[in-house]
Length: 134
Image (cartoon, rainbow, N blue to C red):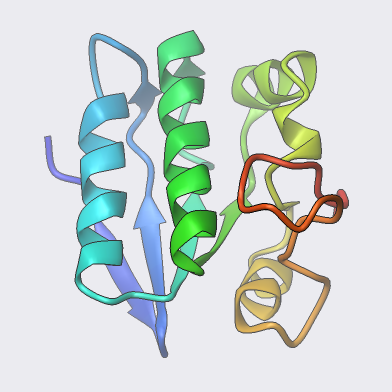
């Protein structure tokens, strides 16, 4: 499975697969996000609109990638999770941790630091911590 990445200036826009799950997609997505960080990418937007299914393993992989980004000083935001994925983010309260934007331009502005904050609020320690909803 290939994870598509396109550039918008200095931002890597990563298209999540249709399934972000233990059996398909989640580990591949995490590896690709790590590769981008290893390549020195500092601004990453994870496009979730095509992710029609996620499970707990998939959410854990997203959380691990987000935590890794924070630890490396990389700005990572998420864009447009659909129905079931949005519900899972809500139930697990990850929607309070991840910077999530419904509008792509707002997500891009957040990654660039020119719009709504992409930095989670809360403790100064680099870890999963709540962010403001957009």
